[in-house]
Image (cartoon, rainbow, N blue to C red; front, side, top):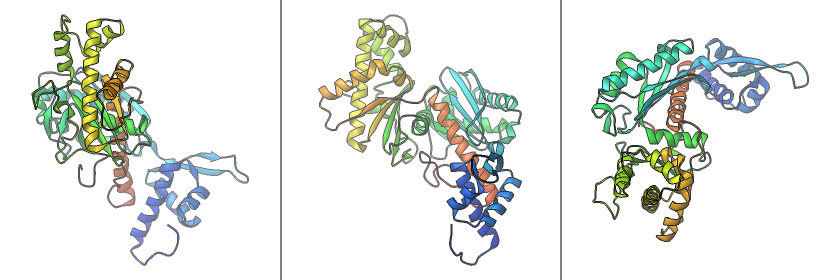
Length: 400
């Protein structure tokens, strides 16, 4: 930012300088004015004036003094945590979870409830109730939320609102965005749950330095969160990653080859009585049940087949087992690797367990919501459009 500027409107010049200062404080803060001056290349006077204005506008605040340096203590500056609030939501098959975070990523409140099963209006009401509960616990109102991101077990169109295909949402998820917005009038984005788990893997897990990876997540069906060149790949209409329908030698074309329903079917075929969940089947396998171990091995073989098929098309650096798969990596990883080796996969495939602690979908939703809320708050102060700096986010124009 140093050097001579072309003549132009003073407002534009201030916006450029303010964004430079804000980005440095956001990325490296808390920082003193000398460090900000060196990092931006702006003059001391410009930095001082810009900081005063950013503090007055509520996006930067003083964060104490640096007493470690020689001479007078320097005032430190950081992004004001409350300048942007964001809500992340995970609509699961059993529970709906929500978390409210501030602009620097600190959790302000969390809440959860049982997932409604009959009407989409009930699902929307659960989301808005959780939002109100979180806001109340944080001492604020839902209207102060700058962005909400809701993870859904569904294919979501590129508009971030339209549910194209749902797996367990009431009424197929039709009209969910509109129903939520009736009682929660804040910027809203719906996103596929496995895509959000991939965002979390990139930000908090094993893929911080991996440009091309695929996260395989198990729910009612099998989904893949695909990150290429550091960006989430959603496909032409949001349907990329529906790998549960990849052709498999044991199934007809278009039939779901892997998911909770398929695992339950394999359990019945193995002679396991009742209707155990995949988690219960895997727990039985840990206990040495031969029938459950046969189901685990069949699941591993299908995962290996899916991974090999994906690798032939995009050849990612890494595959990650997330969701229920990640929780059962102790049973699955060795078997998947053996199937890949035995079936002579034509490309080397590296596969590991997720490194994200807790609810990866919720963490991904909260991170993306915070990013968007913060960028909107920054743009409102310094002018211009919000930057699209989300490495796992949408391409320009994908999702508003």
